[in-house]
Length: 203
Image (cartoon, rainbow, N blue to C red):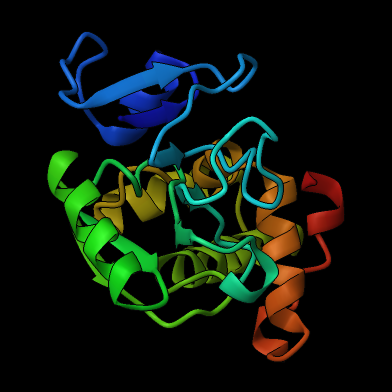
């Protein structure tokens, strides 16, 4: 049996499917409940990224939302992905795994959820998140300088680039604290990611 961890509405929103959609082979269990024994758990909120419930099997695989960590920082038998709102709803999933068994499990689970696994390097932010955080950071810099309002920046990005959300809307959906913490980690090795001074007023 495979388990999706979380509230059905949140899970289906992130997956980009109808709330009443049938998910064969899957059981949805709230993170607040004791999780049943399973061979695979998918945690799109990342609440169990670093620590696993004690009652779950030690040989289970975990797909976890963990853009802010590397595999080396997470428990064994973890497959990383970025499940930010909008990202998990797409067909292609950026993922990080290690070894042929993990690759097989990743492909099997993604097939069940009608997703395509795309293996990417094991780096903070994966790829898509690094790009989006750079855009958000630039928007915060522009706003902090007084060059434009948040609303105007969001509108310009949606109309000019056909983004589903503007940078500030993305920040709200992702969570400003999570976005800031990943930028700070990226900035430890690359100054281009240093958060703009105005982050202090949006976090």
